[in-house]
Image (tube, rainbow, N blue to C red; front, side, top):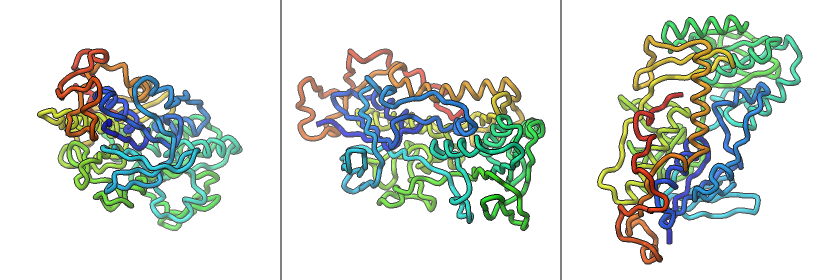
Length: 426
């Protein structure tokens, strides 16, 4: 009798969308189910910390969503049928098929080997908890003086290389970057980055493409062999392959094509958020795969779904933009590069210890937003009759008014997160 909303994936985007939907819509009218393969929320932006031996605070999803009305299903998604509107999952108790009326696809991404030979066999990736834990074990057993090569000069590569070098100053850490070191940063940002890298003793191979990975070395495009007892591969992300196997319209890379409200352009009952979505920001520039993009995408999609289900006259459509890029450079150093709305560096940058504190606050804030979906004020609204399944509108206590609020759950209708913070910050 309820409108069935299924959210696939409990990363930053999926978990926040599920909690926000539960706050936006009357529990009597909707059933929000969150499907995730693991029972814990993973702070993906901290995987480089986990890899070097730091212990992260456990965040069980069952505790985080207790009392929210979100139904948690611990299961691995094995398929999506967007024509039948069903999701196939495999859990500890067996296979099951879940039916939905609205689907929020947030399965995210994993590491991308870019088709380079030897990566799958010999390299470590830190796009998820299992990979970070494997790297942690390998690094803990690595003798002093052994070489570690981090491949990839983007944000993940910079954070991984500096974290490893700071935690294990006895290792010979190198960074292989296809372009120049931090060449997208402002002059001030580049200067600070190079100083930190030099102070940590990291060898930088600039303008170097790695074409193969072996058990004890990496091979570069110019034929050099760089010793590597441990290779960390951080050359970008590849989306979960399930969307490509559906009838959804996707890009060549498998990302779901969506409109400004994150709604699939081919299947209007499907929304895609986070790394799985091909969404654009200012200048129609694709949003980069990141927590900074995923969080405001989750807000946008959840608010758009709630507006459409409750018959709102106007569907929220707030442009997604950037303000800064937050980069941790170990535990004591950081770099906050301020950027234009479409993510291009400007001259201003925050550096040093203050930047490290800023980045830590951003990470904690993102996790807090996931873990506390009920603490922000909202007004739950009733779903219109047309969006309820047969006989739902006849349920005891139902109302014909789309604007009727649940007086026991309502506070001020203004959500404090709906102002300037609808913007990526990390």
